[in-house]
Length: 363
Image (tube, rainbow, N blue to C red; front, top):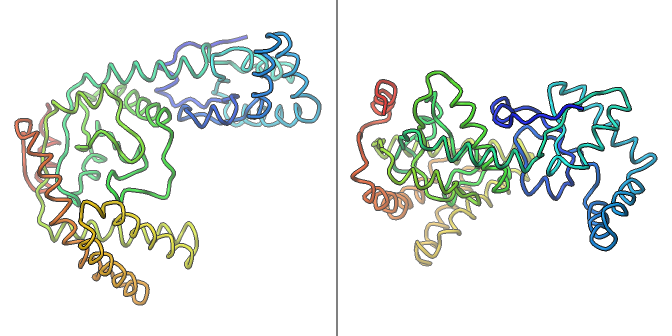
């Protein structure tokens, strides 16, 4: 039966994968197009693993067949068959392309469905993703810098060769950067990044990468080392917009949209509570850097602003803590970091001017 080895093509196409590894393995790292339909659950896998160590491979295989039999086998087969019908262009994948994917492939064949598997399994795809990233980051890189609220992410998303690292990481990179989506495991984040790079690299006009000027970590995820090193020497363009314009962007992003998203996800009352906790947590996370006295002052302003917003929908009160937070913490911190890259800065200007520069000038 068919086994495929064109890992780069699988990454580029975002090919659906029926990943038959146990849930604990899947959570540790998976490919973007994968659907976890395990041959064995975590407990069954652990039992088979223990049997393997104590009694050898034949006993472990026999135990596996004993555990996944009868109605349990039929239920899992039905799920695989449904996935095959939904994704006829997909592949079966296990850890190393070994017994688990071959067993599932055989059971599907017995049910009348010939479905290919990935030779080498997830491990081979993971290695291909790492190698692709290490190779592709050698292309020229342009970083978009600017203080908080400068619209950097929007600029990145407008570029045909832009990669939204924060979007992939499901985090905006600051103490207030959490989104409603749980961050991926480190391996899954790296796999997703590699897939995006391979897809964009396949476009005829792709000649560079446009990225936001990030630190080495975005929330719980960290950048692959090869990318981090390349970003240190990359060209930088800096968005310089007035504070008033930045505040309006931040108002929309953090006070309007985040409130809407929490409410849409959890309902009016629970959503408001989650939104309030989100803002409090963001401020609390930097309390030591602010100084505890200043933190207490800004927290009081935050609580007053939340009361006003809840009562009337007015978000103006948030400026009482947001403006000093930018002036005293975020802006000085970013400008200090930018000074270290002064030799790499090739252009500065307002948002639209930077957008025009990126559109008309290559690296």
